[in-house]
Amino acid sequence: MEATDEQLMLAYAAGDAAAFESLYARHRGGLYRFVLRGIKERAIAEELFQEIWMRVIEARHRYAPQARFSTWLYTIAHNRMVDHWRKRGLAAVRLARDDPADPAPAEPVAAPGREPQRQAEANEQLERLGRALQVLPPAQREAFLMREEGGLSAAEIAAATGSNEEAVKSRLRYAVAKLREALDG
Figure 1 (cartoon, rainbow, N blue to C red):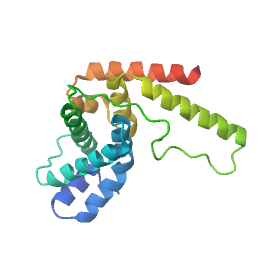
Figure 2 (cartoon, rainbow, N blue to C red):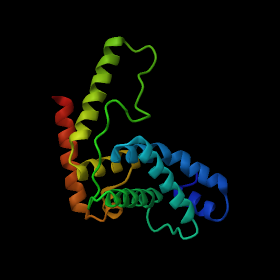
Figure 3 (cartoon, rainbow, N blue to C red):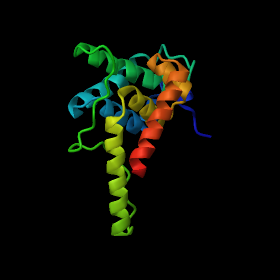
Figure 4 (cartoon, helix red, strand yellow):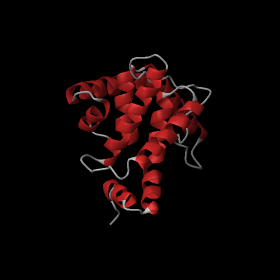
């Protein structure tokens, strides 16, 4: 049986470096995409991504599994992004729009042998989804990405963002409805 994230973090705190490597491998893609979609400039997003993992490393001896590891990780990410925007003079997290010329990594790739027409349709659908994500209000986009990229529940998103669960559920409902409308239209 594979170790849970919480077990891996506790093992890492006890000195097992391989446990950290496993955690990093599990969460790097989703966390990176979350940060990249929240910060307009790739270089800054990469720097913040590294800072988030440094904070995980620094906090390993204080870690207590009171919630899922992913909730704890995305709370660190959310707080680090808030700090970033505050330093820039903004009072709250403002998730930046994706740059169409600089697409997010790890987008789904069509399987080999797919028909060109189906590939074109899939690419068009991905582009519509990307544009729809760009125009979501920041709080809705953040909640949606935490759920989709981080696998967090509404309660965990609320804990990570300092919001309440009902507000998060509402943000998720509106985000999903707007995304569906954009994809169906």
